[in-house]
Length: 379
View 1 (cartoon, helix red, strand yellow):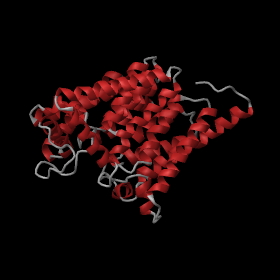
View 2: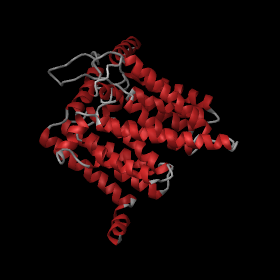
View 3: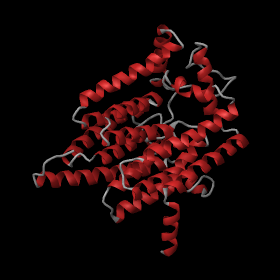
View 4: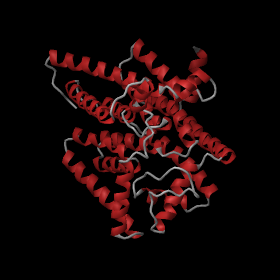
């Protein structure tokens, strides 16, 4: 126990955790240079040049990169400061900026310091995984959490900005906008969100014409609603693995019903906002046909937040540590069986579904207690 206490005392400090984030980013950058896993960065970078040249953003460019560009038309503006740099320098700045942005946002989550320490440390494993493929998922998680944090700190205008940014990076990040309705001035937050959306899209006019903006949005809506974006590392893929032939529309209906049911029991359980955020982070990934293994940093963020905000029990602690070890902490190529379970049998999806089940059970039980005791519903 003394060794554990010493580790906690020396590692669980903001300055030490900040150093870990910077060192992790530098380590990943060296790996990127050595192994060249930078296709995503090339896609982002080339989108900047395609955008500046008014070329199609969502067409195939096999001579430049594989896969397609799926992001909102505003994304090239965000990436421009990194894309215009020489590729080696731009990639270094990108991974360090990603790590530092995540650390700063996580540092100021509306949690106790001890809880923030745990969150910052344990989510680092997924951040490293995403940095290794120059993904944008850490920003989606960070901005979704920043929207919640800003709202909790009485800053609805700033919160609405992070909600819009979450949507503009990956459309499903916009689910965090639901928090607007947990604020007394929800109508103002919607107006703020429209303001930020207008400002950020108006910035496109500095480089392209209104007609080009409309074309980009038409192309974007077409590609995100088509079949090319289908990764299906989620309930969709899990259903296929176990041999269930279920039409996608039925899975979508189930997802919506699960979502609505949770909102109802969450209301009667007292409307704890941190628990709602945890639910949204997990639900939006496991019921997302565009999910891939790296996307689970968002769901794991929800798992961490749920464990922190939930009263502890032996079951919840066991489920939490199995989920974190199986999904994040144990690296690839250490346990072949675990790798097979992760990538062929959707173990991340299954574990996060179990955590979601724990959220339902806990929330429903609390709702029943409140109804039985006629306890008033408060935010």
